[in-house]
Length: 637
Image 1 (cartoon, rainbow, N blue to C red):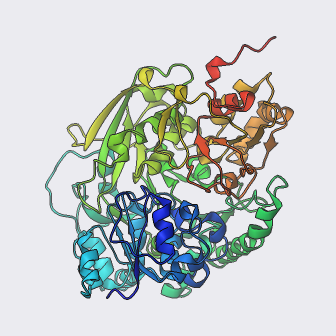
Image 2: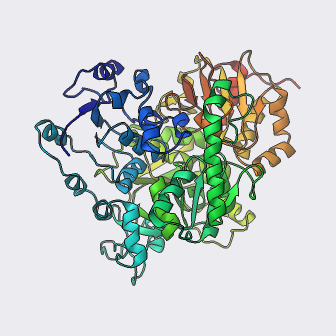
Image 3: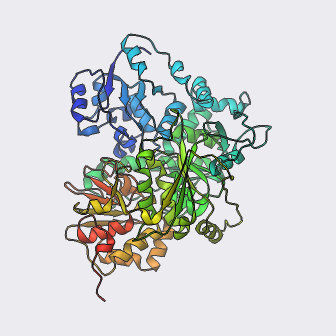
């Protein structure tokens, strides 16, 4: 490629972005926006409209820094986009890559790229680099061969790029002209939990389970694959373009989930949002339903053949098994890592590949072991712990990273795990992706063993690490020393002790999502709310994460507690997290939310969003400001 267009620098200072939109070309900027995320690249609203370049291109970066207008990037003639660290944070939505192309972007240059976004670029053939000297070469008039940009990539990524993308690579696998790559021969070595698990799932024809090390790239056998209505139509479109009507591999190991749009028609959703999103969302849902009928795939959702709920909660309840590789087209798939599965989110191209082959490419991650000791004091929850961990400068700055394609996981272990249930522990694994990590896994512990036994999976062995395994770092965390923690608006890594922010006014409280809508979450919130009243003007939304959670919460009287306070209580679903349900901020409101992500405008409207635990959310609803539940006056008998 040659530079025929302009270079867009995504500066931290929105005025510098505005100047570029007005026609000024910059050589560079002093500070780039950290963590340019997929919600900024393409909004949840735009994602309901379709998945092609012509539809999504005009929406690329709309409202970024509150200065980018509709179709401004394409109209500005930009060809290259330049970002800082953690480019592509957030969702697994491959439409973010499609939106780049639709806006005329032909190359991404960034200091570091988040794992899912990087994979989506490799698998769909979008050139990128972390080498900023490429900018100088382009500006000097040099023609850059995209193949040269792929050469520094690891072997499997390079082979996929040379084949023309992951689906072209798949054809060689299914017709026998290509074999799965063999990892380097390390010889026997002690392995971490994840390395041991992947060794057992690696596709290595004619060989025993290999010893694996960080950076190795393999194809792995999948145990479960899933899609939801935001992604299914694109996945099936890619599948049929590549493979026609070939039956999918092991349809019994696949499920679809109607969960992201089910709250969109709720009366508490602003009319303008319903008008803009509901029609296109239903068209995407209908496309998923039709595809599932063609391929024999079961669907979870209201009135469907399987019970409704948020996909991640349902995977834990029904599908995930210790030692399995679990993939869904959603970044919060790591939730299932609580059961000792290697669970991670993938894009649409990767899922189309997995649906045809039953395999998924994996870069063996570096592992950080987190050993939890002590007792949680003062209502400390796993939400506090994970916000504390991912907001640590060592994690936020990704100091585990040694190369541009490196990935990392958290391996949770230690006696501190035994203080919480699987519901609560799943928050630890769910939110690893918010720290720029691939996934999280929980080592064998009593709560997980008991949960597996209770759900009919007790005969399955929990994987564990080998003695002497090598870690990128071992973090020893005494739960008694972790403060109640929140994340300030803009990024889940914006760690802040709750005690420092008691003067923040709160108008909108959301207790919901795969992170905050479990039975344990609803119990924690109801315990704080019982016998009290909401502060004047505060709105409260509660969304159970599955039908089983709703049924149990109803039986325990929790739902009655919320309804008695005037809360909006919904059917199971996850729309509030992404602006598709009740809880969308009204003008001038500040939100306290138990969800896992607080990017600008992610919840469907402007307005600061603080991430908090369920107990803190409930206490904040009572006082109208961020509140430590321990400071509330006693409820009179």
